[in-house]
Image 1: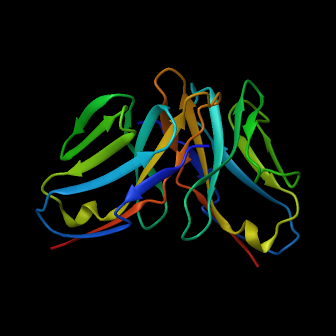
Image 2: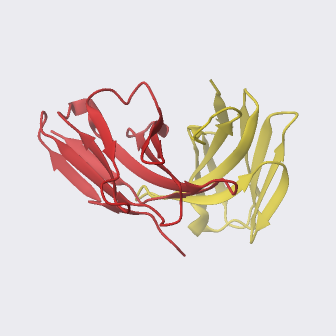
Length: 113
Length: 111
């Protein structure tokens, strides 16, 4: 069965450093998402991406965050200057419309120290 | 904004028991997802519902659109069913199909 692949599975970074989280969505899916889950809390929507641009973003997705689909297969989330409160599990997901079927990646656990 | 509530928050069951997890939401939706999250953190999609009932193996999901309520049932529960079960909804008018999540129900099935 097709999978959404995320790398790395765990990243530790110093506060203030830039991080890039990588995802390879399912090839024929059209919508791509980043969600995050702070430890012990519910999963929250960050951003959706369609037709090579951001289609919606949440209040969490401020100027420190950006997304890119540089080569038609990878989908990246960049955090420019990490804060302690950015520590969370970040999930990539992709979706094929009409079926509404979502596939999630296994997540990247980001720890900011 | 859709509010998604799940109950119970925690559930401990004996192996073999029938389990029900409930989800209610505040605003009309176009789809509801039941998801499973294992201790390692990965999320697996179990069901996507827009009406009625779906069954997959020992899992059954139902939705009542008028009542804004869905249930996930597990028959003949097994220790490997231990996980967090999460309800997530796509609200009507959410143009990019993003999901709003509940807090999850932590299920522990003991032998």
